[in-house]
Amino acid sequence: SYELTQPPSVSVSPGQTASITCSGDKLGDKYVSWYQQRPGQSPLLVIYQDNKRPSGIPERFSGSNSGNTATLTISGTQPMDEADYYCQAWDSGKVVFGGGTKLTVL
Amino acid sequence: QLQLQESGSGLVKPSQTLSLTCDVSGGSISSGGYSWNWIRQPPGKDLEWIGYIYQSGNTYYNPSLKSRVTMSVDRSKNKVSLNLSSVTAADTAVYYCARGAAEAGTYWFDPWGQGTLVTVSS
Image 1 (cartoon, each protein chain N blue to C red):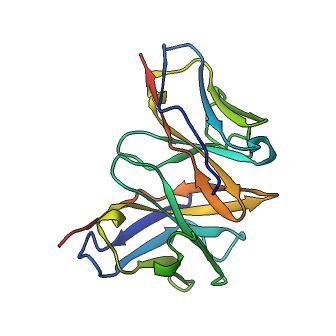
Image 2 (cartoon, rainbow over the protein chains, first blue to last red; image 1 turned 135 degrees about the vertical axis):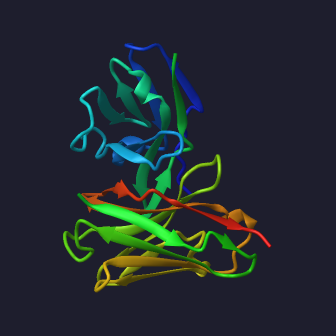
């Protein structure tokens, strides 16, 4: 079955750029979505179709996808961005989630 | 603004059936060609997609759970339901309802309900 791999944790200083990766076989041939989950909250869509932002999501969130790796980039990271981030793709009619990355802003 | 609210049995005994409902407000289940999905997250663990149902009643379940899952839709009440049979402790999780959108080989979930915790224990 298809698998998506994320680093367990990423740390970033406030105001700096955070990059969270998601790896999978030929992932660049698929579309990737990203979700933010703050503690005790439900996931929130922040990126879909690799690089599109839903209404209401700040411009500092961006995405890219090429080769075997998709990347969520948060520019000018704010303390409120501290959360778990999950990537997600669609493979052979099945939804696949990555294992999640805990973003720490310190 | 579309809102989803899960409800149902919070405590289920092993081998019994877990039953949950997702009430949709601020929009119709029957509009827009969206799917209605169930996704779960065991405490401290990753997200697992359970499956989806369309307003037509068409379903698709995660193969790993397919033998135990049944989803239904009630268009008159604007709600979808999930039944998961023969539960074990491994089914303990927060269960989310989410609207799914599909386009050109991609699929995403927006919005999500707040989730409901289901514990399987005797």
